[in-house]
Amino acid sequence: MSKIVARMEKMKDGNLSGIQRHNQRETNNHSNPDIDIEKSHLNYDLVNPGSINYREKIKQIIESQRISKRAVRKDAVLVNEWIITSDTAFFQENTDTQAFFTDVVAYFSDRCGRQNVAYATVHLDETTPHMHLGIVPMYEGRLSSKQVFSRQNLLEIQEELPTYLQERGYAIERGLRGSPQKHLSVKEYKDVQKELQVSKQELANQEQILAEKERELHSYEQAIFRIDRLLEEKNEEVKGKVQAMNQLETKRNEIINSLQTTVLPDLANVKEKKFSLNGLKYVLSASDFSAIKSITKDFETLRTQNKHLKIENNNLAQKNKELTQVNHEQELQITELAYELTLKKEQLTAFEEKQLNYDQSEQIKQELDTTTQTVSVLETENKRLKDKITDLTYDFSELNEKYQEIKLKFDGLTTYLHERLGHAKETILFTIQQGVKYLQNAPKLKKSLERYSKDRTYLIDEKGTLFLPPDTGSKGVTMSLNPHFYPLKAPFYNRETGCYEFVGEYMANGRSRTNTLQLSEEQVLEKKAFTFEQSTDKKAWQQSKKYSRDMSKGRGLSR
Image 1 (tube, rainbow, N blue to C red):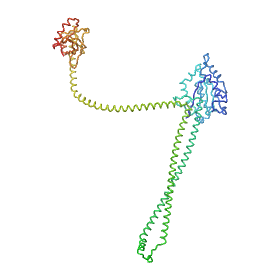
Image 2: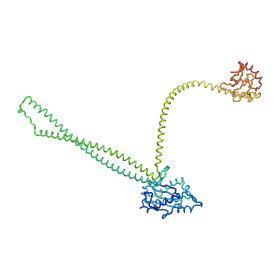
Image 3: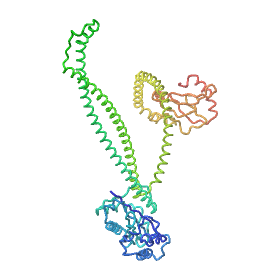
Image 4: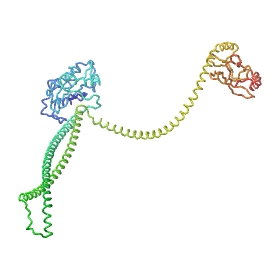
């Protein structure tokens, strides 16, 4: 299906005189060499009955709708000119160009307003029929090309126009969607047209050459077929003659054998004994003599014919071989021509796409450069990955060795864990028992806390944590029934041992020592644990040293 070409150009005040001269053919000197002046009288305008002044007509359309009284900017876009066309095949099928371009004008009139269509000039004096459609971009009483032909509106036109024309019976569709190409200028478009014509001519020449080669190949194939048939006939004839010759050879051998067994022995005896031949009579009939003579003659004739047939057969085989070689060369040449024809067709398709849409040369060049860079990067990355694979292979080997070592250790640990599992079960049961015991003693501990809080003694809470009074000073504390003890961290309940542990510093033998005091639940409940009282009296501290030394000898601390 043919594709529609619909591209737009923005025209400012400085462009109006030029497009007027070109569209209305006001001069015979044209920069476009494809214009056939003898056909210029076939051009027509679907909006205006004759030639007009573009600047006055566009100014009239603007002023009739414009609300603002300020002057139009000098750089404003006064008219958007659309060039509408398709390929040659489309206009060969649709010879009524006026009906086609009239439908196009109707579409733009419905979308942009009939009053804003300044001109619709159709050119039939160039290679392909096309229309220059000028639309003044008026939007809500002001001149605005950005509003009338915004990007979104242009996309809608590219979609709607082909559909509009298809509904009216035209076999036409839009170009490629999302193409990054840019529109061709008029000169570039003409260059593409010329290049396209040259390519079409080259394609036609290649097709003609290909047809000639195909005909020549067909004649070669027929000649080979005839030679094959002739060879078959000659082979059958040779087989028959060889068979007859073999029969004659057999008959000749029989006669020779008969002569050797009858006549020759007698002749030998005559020669040796010198017997007279007058007494020996050998009767040979005339028919046998004639038969022998005829057989000998036929045998020589067949031998000569066989020799000639062999020579002829060899010649035919050589000729067949040469024709087969020629046929193979022709097939190769045809294959090459077919490949060239395919390339030409692809080039032709590319040129048609280029004619209907955009110039792809720069994009292809950029894509080629990008592809080259990508290939280079990929080659570098491939090399890097190969090196990495080598390193990883080596690392994998090392890891495999380590895995084997770890596996051995794991197997050993598995065995060890199985052995320890029984002990773990016992530990868990013991912990549960201790927890049950703790829960059973919780009411007693609570009462003990209530009792100890009266004399500022703090031991444990419901969670089993042992606390000091919040006002414990840094100079130390005194402990009833225990040596002088500095707290280093908060005591805690060890559920595994079932004891309360308290880490602190105490005086022993005149030196400061660090130790962990362990108190059982029974000691706490029976108030055998130490209590803490705030002490700021230096004298009391000195007096407690002796007591601390005595207690450190085994009578005060539970290790």
